[in-house]
Length: 420
Image 1 (cartoon, rainbow, N blue to C red):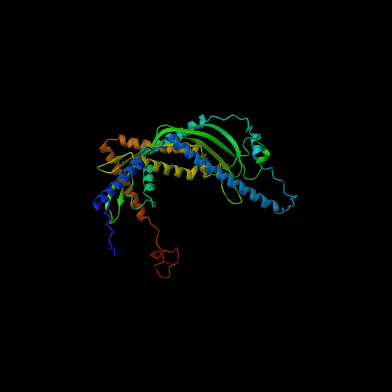
Image 2 (cartoon, one colour):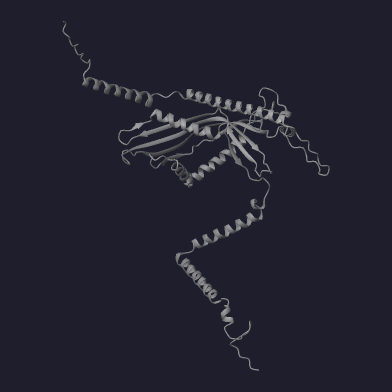
């Protein structure tokens, strides 16, 4: 009878210590690779990033136009199936003049959409430059823009792990945007052009909601900088367990694109004013220069991943507000002349004389010697006190003083005894 033999127990290839060391080394290598390639990796070139973003915006615009066209076709079919009611025209009311269409406006202004050359906007550039220069001058003497930025950055949307944000640098630039190549393009109520590649037909623009759109190229090369600093708070396991100082500076160095402006007529039935809408086409280029600094002692400077995240967030913010198909809408005031808005003429001369009189009086008072000025001020105070005393004793009689005597009549003198 064969004896049962227990199989030999296999020894592990690595001991516990060796396995622990190998696991720690693998974690360290993964962290090093993550820090090197994800945080400190070289970002793609600006040209590649701009082309990728432009392709994404173009695909989004095409999808939006396709959805608008499909929705318009479905509405056209439903409208065609509904019977139309023929309303009898009144024979008493005088017929109103024909509504001005896009075709008639272009004819009366001698503007040929197909053959008119794009216009330079030198005069417009001068006006815009004056406005921006005045805005920059006002910002130098007033902290309103700094206060508004600080309030906006520390609004209700600030996360709990971010400390108070403080603005450390603000530069509004020195150059001005240049507008050029302005042209007029008819568009429909959805902002779509009329069949590109074909000659413009005025009969195509008679549909309600069609309007004219001005498109112009804009280019700006400047250094507009906003620098802030804050602290990242670690509130686990207890509040303010750790702090990480963060400094960030964002500069706009280049912007080029196509600006589209159009007017939406007022609707008296709905009591809506005339509005101006503007948007940028999806072919714009926006370049940033982003500098960052992390830590207080061991500092990390200009982390590429932080620059990519901030730039992506800024592009998304801009796209969500004023890049087609989204647009900004501004209500315009009434253009009819009003008395309260009138300036100049005799009223301006009177205001200037009053202002000059006050200024001259102040200058004369400042030119007097100190002792004479004190005497004049003391005399003026004494005169004011005398006038105050006179007015205090010159008061109207009260009703109880007049009717205090018994049996007296209104208007009689109770203390005067007239003998008969």
